[in-house]
Image (cartoon, rainbow, N blue to C red; front, side, top):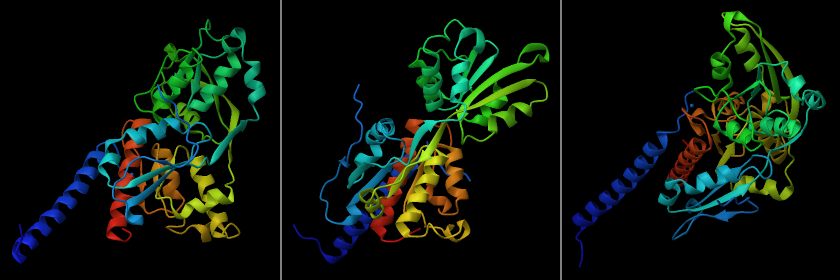
Length: 347
C-alpha cells in the first residue's frame, strides 16, 4: 500500500492536527481545576521514580517534577500527581524527585502553648484557630488528650488541616467556605450580643497577620486574639548533588511561600548570585528554569511578587485549593512544559 504525494501531505496534516488537538484537550481538562488569575499505600519519595513513557528518544521526551515540602511530607502530592490521568496521556518519561526546601523548628512561643495545654487554661478561649497541618500537629502533640472535654471550639482553615487535627482525635467545629485565611476571618461565627470572643492562634512565626487583620475589620463583632508563634520554617540548604538537578527540573511544586523563598535562595547559590542585591536578582527566568505549581493563591502570589517568573508560568488552583487540585495544576504545568520542549522554545 503506497500513498501519493497529495495523500502523504493530507496524512501529515491530519497527524499534526491530531497532535495539536491532543494538547488542547490536555489543557482544557486541567484548566477546569487550575488557572492563574494574578493565576492504603504511603510511599515516601526516596529517589527518582519513573512513572510512564514509551519510545523515549530525546530530552523532549523526559520531564522532571520536584516536590519541595519538608522531608516525609511529599507523599500525598506525589501520589495525587502520579494518579492524574494527564500524565498517562503524555508520551514521556516523568521523573519525580524529592527536594525538601524547608524544615520545621520550634517557635519562640512553643513553651507558652504548653502552658495552655490543660482544660482549665484552654477554656480562657472561645476558639482555637488552626491554619496549617503543621500547626495542627504541634497543637495536637501539646494537648495529648487534655482538650477533649473542653468547651473551646476549633476552627480549621481547610480540609487538609481538619484531617491533620483528626489524627489527634480533635473535632473541628468550623471550616470556612474557602480554604484561605481571609475567608476564615470573614466567616468565623461571632458570639451573640457583640460579646468579646477570645481566640487563640498557634501559628508559624512566618505567617502573615491575615487572620488578625480580618477579625479586627469586622465591625459587627468583637474578637480578641492571642497569637503564639509555635513553630518556624527554616530554609533547607541543598547538597551539591541536589543542586545538580536544577538543569533537569521542569516543574517545581510549592506548598508554601517559605518553600518558594528557600528554593530561590538555593537557586542563587547555584547561579553564584547570592551576593547580589535583591533587585539585581529580580530577573524573570532566574528561578532555576522551572514552572511553578502552587498549592494556592498565597504561594502563587509569592512566586509572582518575586519577579522571577512569567505570570503564565505560575499555576495554582483557582477554586477549592487542596492536594487534588494542586496535583491538577501540576499536571497542567507538566503538559505545558512538554509542549514547550516539543516546539523547542519558551513562551
